Length: 215
View 1 (cartoon, rainbow, N blue to C red):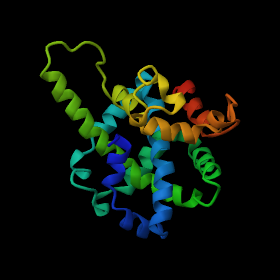
View 2: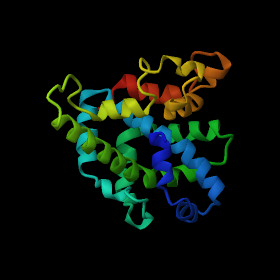
View 3: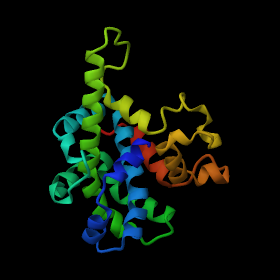
């Protein structure tokens, strides 16, 4: 099971659907679009040292217990989620939502707007668990090698194991790439159409976050 599937498996989809005022199929479709975009936005921010430090600080403030044994929607702080979404996407939030709506064929924009603040604390709690496990593993090793910060590495692994590690991901041959494959589908009209730049699409927006270095 990929990390993406692991997060989704712990979501109370029926409760989320009721909260959003849609059926479970629509809720799941929105999750399938919003969750990879949220992780990719966090990954883009983590490539900048200041962004990575800010993200690690945010992760440290979230309890992994939120996602252990399945999420109780009543424990999710949506006010916190709104702050996280603003920090991740900044002024690009509307553009991200519009790009997701375009990719989905329309109709999910309003759902995604309400969904992102629900998913954001869940993602940070999931990352908190991964980060704690990574730290514990490193403490038990004498050969620590490189990769001090950790969060960037964890997100890099979730976003396709790192481009270098999964050279075949463009071929679609690596099923274990999970999230990387999903992101490829979201980003890439370009992957299917052969156009290296999907004008104004989700890939460009998150690429702008990546290149612009968010604060």
